[in-house]
Amino acid sequence: MPQNSRPAPPTQLRIGLWGPPGSGKTTYLAALNVATTRRPDGVGSWIMSGLDDVSTSFLDRSTHQLTTQRTFPVATQQETNMLFRFTGEREVVRRSKIGRRLVEMEPIAFELDVLDVPGAMYDNPSREQGQEQHVNVPGPGGPPVADRQHAPPLSLMEQENRLIDHLQMCHGIVYLFDPERDSLEQDAFRYFHPVLNRLTERMMSQSHISRAKLPHHVAVCVTKFDQPNIHRHAQVKGYTVSDEQPPFLPRVPNEGAADFFKLLCSDPQSNSDLVEKGLRQHFNTLNYFITSSIGFYVPGNRFRLHDSMNVERVGPGHEGVRIKGRIYPINVLEPLLWLYESILPARP
Ligand SMILES: Nc1nc2c(ncn2[C@@H]2O[C@H](COP(=O)(O)OP(=O)(O)OP(=O)(O)O)[C@@H](O)[C@H]2O)c(=O)[nH]1
Ligand SMILES: [Mg+2]
Image 1: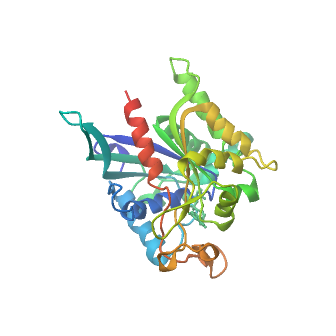
Image 2: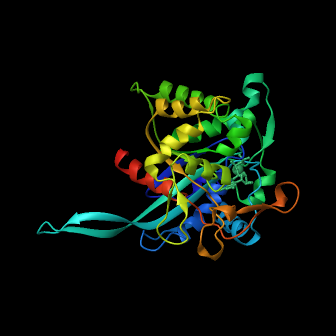
Image 3: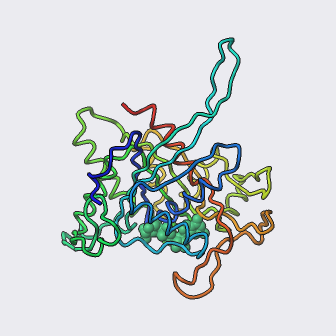
């Protein structure tokens, strides 16, 4: 379905997902549905739904994949534009007529317009080489799944332009940093700076007011916290606390998340310190989250450090990686709720 035939949504949160290949962008989107459903009682309940065929079928397919098949999505080959609605409630504090403090739940809804792109797009090699490579991608807005194979090929340059167009229009960005990948590949900066440069160039040249920083609100998400070496690292450095309720999961409270991210970016073998600094230099409104799309393995409703890994290898290749048990997403919905809360008052 062409994008312009969609009804204009009332409160739309246009969010860009940004991160290198394999950093967990598609899995993050896939886990959102479970994260909304498995949200603990008493913190506000939420429902996520797709708003067109492409988005609804992504939700069905990816939820089935993570929960029943216990496999991860395959690496993204084509950009996909998706639109989801989140309906839920938030706590608001009011004063009664006699000045008494009242805490009430207020219904809210927002729509998430997101573009999931192959991470390799963030490092378009044809830009430097002046080549016009062509790949098959859907037309604007993403046609129904069945039509995708007939979509006209677009050059990498055109795809990159659409990615920058999308980011330029976004109110917020979820920036994913995968510490596991960064410790092996040390390439977060390589996928970061070309996009930041082009986005800055576009926004500065089109803005009538000279701004010091880009207007996007950015949720910086460190992914795959469930990986034993990542949560052990956080634990050893004193960033973790344990939940007081079963299954007593470790987590990094938001107050320590920015520092932990900075620590993860300080590896002298990589240029990731420039990612950490670049984000602060280019954006005014940032918040940090230590996240996991699948969460820890918790048999018997109790976290056990020695048996907490929720991924197992049962064979070779991507198909050989399985999710062991139920997924309990950590800080997956929270970045969106924060973006909503922080963007809404700032919007004209
Ligand atoms: N342990 C763990 N692994 C994860 C998690 N999320 C993703 N992964 C792993 O990371 C791989 C890549 O995840 P994707 O969601 O495909 O990453 P992506 O950023 O969409 O990758 P591209 O589409 O290639 O840009 C998955 O196949 C999993 O092996 C997580 O929460 N925990
Ligand atoms: Mg992907």
